[in-house]
Image (cartoon, rainbow, N blue to C red; front, side, top):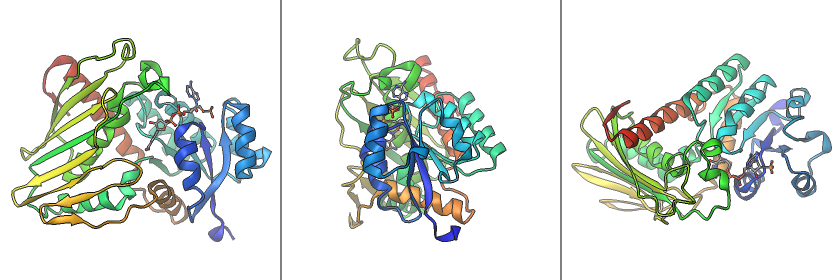
Length: 334
Ligand code: NDP
């Protein structure tokens, strides 16, 4: 029966993340499996077919993709393309009647994000963003400690996430394909971390671009940016991201009665946490397997996802506000 069938996932875009993280995770998932691929590369298509035992009928390119509507093996389309291409493929997957996971950032403009939400609503299918850390136990604990005010109301947060970009994926420094630079790619984890630790949305933001260390590489997007979120109760979050500097990723929250911190905070594994009372002894898990199994569970049992498209739109709006604050030098209300 369908209840004991694993849901079929098709990965769209067989780049670094699909190859290095999602395909391996789909070998550990309980409720879904890798059933199809969508790729512009014939060489990758034949390699993946062999390696993952994918039948020809479940292999698409970007032109034949819409025929997926007729394929009952594919329940979930997972869009893992450069940021600016998310919108087109989510809309086409919606029109094909599939459930969809879309990688972060959901879109490069709020207009695209709204278009995606409307298409998914019309299709009546489940829609989530690839926010893997919502399913990661260190981050679950930060949410719990922060939202339940274990150290009093969170008054101050700090979040850092960045790395030295070597131009292996040039779309990441293209305005047209990336939509922006490290803020959309890495800074989004700082933003997300502060929002779910505080359990609130900020009322305003201020921001400042970092100097362009390599003007040729960072012709179209920022090399780095630091920004502050301001919350209604006066709490603040100081965040920083960069493509010019390797940082130990960090998420820290302080209240009047103590603090909690993850460092490293945002990687695929090896996360470590501590509070003012001592180390957090929490196991690392396969984040992508947990994320995809949760989504499959939502589809199978008609439950709402914890990381819906609406959250993706909210974050795109806040990221736009951060860019506006950096461009104008003004405090921007959200
Ligand atoms: P890659 O550049 O490695 O892969 C993107 C793939 O998209 C390419 O390999 C290609 O696949 C396909 N593609 C289609 N059109 C284009 C185009 N015009 N230019 C470049 N690639 C194209 O990127 P990543 O895998 O690192 O990132 C993909 C997405 O996943 C991004 O949105 C990123 O933000 C997100 N991501 C999320 C992570 C997370 O932790 N949640 C981690 C890393 C990335 P093909 O050859 O098969 O057609």
